[in-house]
Length: 145
Length: 164
Image 1 (cartoon, rainbow over the protein chains, first blue to last red):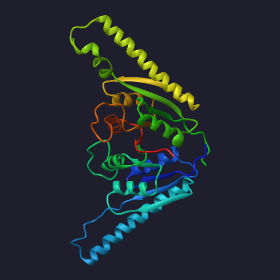
Image 2: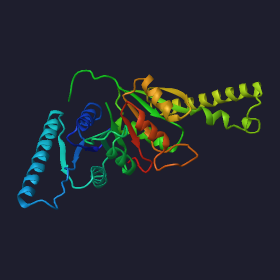
Image 3: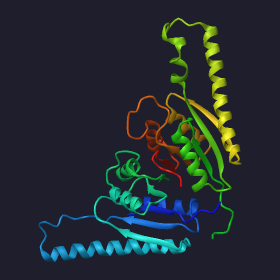
Image 4: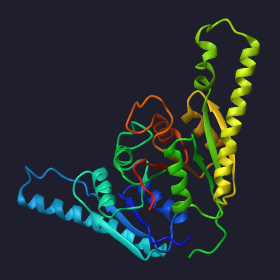
């Protein structure tokens, strides 16, 4: 059955869980005509009290991290043979960003890990994946292990 | 594309007869399915609900008519078999090869997690709302349970989703 290219949104951060999610997508779902949107929300620092120099330093640090993450995933995209992969950086909460991109691009599916960068392991399911599941308008794949 | 024979996936699709589960099945079939997938359609039965809320037990909770109970169980078995048969027909109508299984548990979510472990599922596909009479939450309690307890990846299909 010939399908027009699907649009897949994957939430990514520096954690190994989003790598697992990405790998799972590549190994199990990847189709040649898929278009991939990798959504990343950089950590926000509270800039209110920062002096200009510190502000500059913090912004640099954030930018560096984002570039590094983007490069890492661009390599993975190339290695997997994906032709259409886009790295999207957004401000705000990761859950909201993922759902917003999926809605805007009319994604066919969202892929997310079950956890991320959170320090406190309260539940088996992270707050971002929880948010995405409750707000997404398309199917959501929650990867684990 | 990657060569080498990939491992065949064991995919479980939770089917309770609701539109949401049918939606999930159709989405999987059209968007995610691979020819090599080993598909099992699973019907989770709530033990308590199906037997003990029947009219049989309403009036006499402790005194038990053995024959009546036997009949209730027999009827329930036939009922479940019919549901499984319907699921088999569903797959046949789309020329899909697969199995059907029922699983009994106090909570359907528990049953699904258990059978996913038994079948070593690589993925669980399910809808968010089902047949439950009580609409407790925005997403169904069964999918919530499975999401939190399953060891396999879970594909959740929302009811608003329309297959193009």
